[in-house]
Image (cartoon, rainbow, N blue to C red; front, side, top):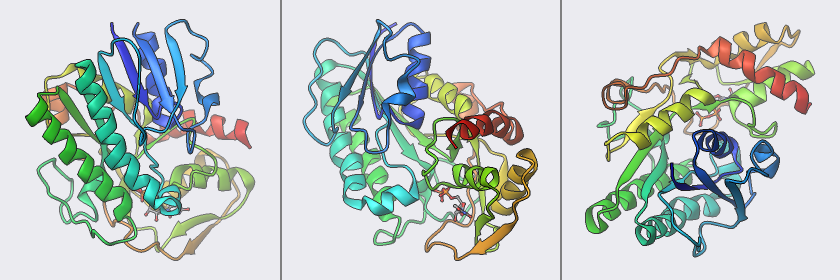
Length: 310
Ligand code: UDP
């Protein structure tokens, strides 16, 4: 058991991770600037005696008093809709925020987690994507603020590992969903569930033949904890390999919500990746982890949360 800082602690993944770490007996310090995170997400743990919350922007110098055993840097604007509206902030949190949190980890002699992304692979030319695939990213493209900030973040983590001997972990997180995603998140699962519950048409971009592989949040959190407990200081894919077309996802959500909604096709956003699926060979071998929740089960657990929000 130790004392752990979680940046982005009021966000979708951050809040689930804070709960898990409290359950595991750790003392948790959550930090969030509440741009996309919300303190309501932390209501289960907010008044716990091993929990504290700091409102702070990680792109500014970070001071945390006392010891820290782990620094887990989850702060990020992860939705394409959000990061397109906040490109500079997105670049700063991946670059300056990663630098500041690494500096803190060095000061505290703490183990460090960087939450990177499948977007480092861009619009991939190989499927599934193994960690040694170098990606296909347009550095000046519409998604580059996110992709490049995470690629830069990985390079900074590598540099701190090599020059300052920090014990680092890098998770490349693939599409994840579950309760506590925002209704206005803009990503496909909250959008489709919201539309299905409201009886509105589901807005499939393009013909819907593009694919994603969706991981339920509890599996993702288990993967992050397994990574922290492993000895792997190089990037590891964390996600679910069940690859689906967006059209299949839309039909599945219509079915599970018993919705009368139809489907309309809208223009595909530029640079939207065509395929995405994690190669989990490394995660299975080095973390002894793989996801267990099917898309249908995960959606069944997520839909009631969105019903309560609407
Ligand atoms: N998408 C869609 N309709 C929507 C929102 C998203 O068809 O209302 C598509 C989007 O174009 C992409 C996929 O769903 O092909 C996943 O998009 P999301 O924004 O969830 O995440 P991404 O994997 O692109 O970061």
